[in-house]
Image (cartoon, rainbow, N blue to C red; front, side):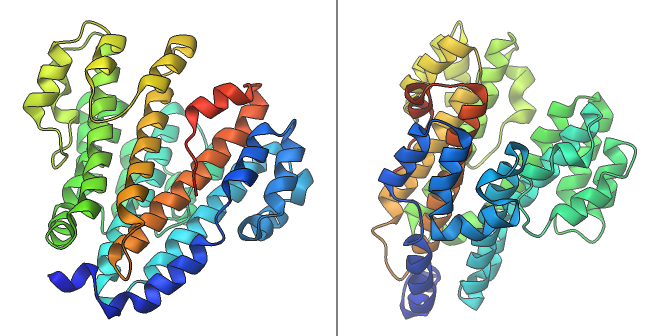
Length: 352
């Protein structure tokens, strides 16, 4: 086991990752994008970044239509995470594919939710990350007329077939899209159990960051439940195992709170002070999701970046790249919605 996360086997991979990391956007350039007076000005700055030039050119250059911006960002993220699978040591490619699989589930979630809402492929295409379950596969599946048929189509010859069948069964039982989406998340993270054990046995900090992702999803479930006055027992099937916060602690946290604001103040795993302030102003739960994601990504960097010649080096890059693209989405799209730079700064946490 000790070989999985250390040793000279990672010399080539670590060197490649460090080269990729050098192309990430610097803090000063990112701040300039946040402070830019318009979308065109922000794109001009982004165009000067070597890692994004080709993606922006592909979708129309610095004068591209605003609806194509997310296509360019999604394309860039997909290129980066797919490259990690290729450069990982052969023995660890299965582990890396499993971790990159969260974007497969992301794509499936987009498709399922769109089908339930009566939307077409075009409405979600910009946010699809082309990993193994790519745009072509999603587009074909969305030709099906129902959520169940879409999931059945995606399950054919898929490594996620059991997860997809579970999501379909959950949806068929309740006709509630939330149940289907929850089943996808629960199934995916359950499938990571073996990977988590393998990583944890050799490098606990790497597994801890992944477990914190599970914590964030469970906390979001509690927050949503508290907002609509659900009982904890009603949330049980939506909770994911293998996080760092045990179910008993989640229950105590939930039952002790009288409101969303009260619940958030009981949460010690994440720093959600800024997110709570944004929520009070906007009423949008997405502020908590962004806050926890940023916390996880920055926590991941602090414990993983010091590692060298290890799997942790690649995992750290995943979090860096995801944070970079997430920050760009918020910064650029905020100009469409007229958010002030100071409000944007509350929702992002970028440091390279």
